[in-house]
Length: 287
Image: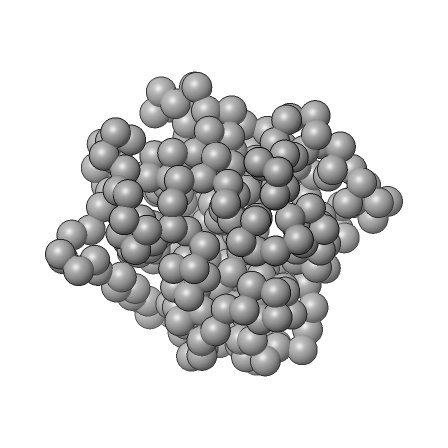
């Protein structure tokens, strides 16, 4: 049986001591007041995530029997480097994942963060510490991790194919996860948010829905692409509940090898879906 979880803390305070993560308030940032200073946008994004994590870590998961990994804590150096480099202005498209996996963002703090792409293509840097109650079968080694995440490999390979350089990609696109935590059973089996108990999932979704709306408002997002059905469904509900119906939501097939359809030419399927939803040009340098 896993030991009881200790609360993990993240503190990304802006220079003025201001935190616009939102907390339990139902208000949302005013899109007309989106900052123009790139560094301020990055900091406000980190503030939203920090508040989200603070609220999520107050909750119990698996009746307290699940291990909770928080990459925004133990991989904070890498994650902050990623955000400060590539989240520096408005984004037309938000590519939204569900939550970290053990060999991707779970290691690097970068969504779909396949180690080689994060280190060698994005050139993010930083050291990692250890998560609270690290599982021996899921060790954290950060950018030195030798394991490869298939989903991340497929995702970043396609993004590199479409954009050529990170600078082109992040002109109009940003990658983000709906939930920043990932959960493990004592066996080290991954537990995704949809697999949580209904009452636990509802509390998690309330926090994550609100944080997503804050991110969309901050970045002036026009189109959210949910990677997988769950991410797309949550985006639709969160945006509808906060009267953001003008923001488009589309679904991109999840690249996970667990999905049989993704093993039959996922990249070509993804290109067709991005073409059909009229966002593919945002991934290219001609935009």
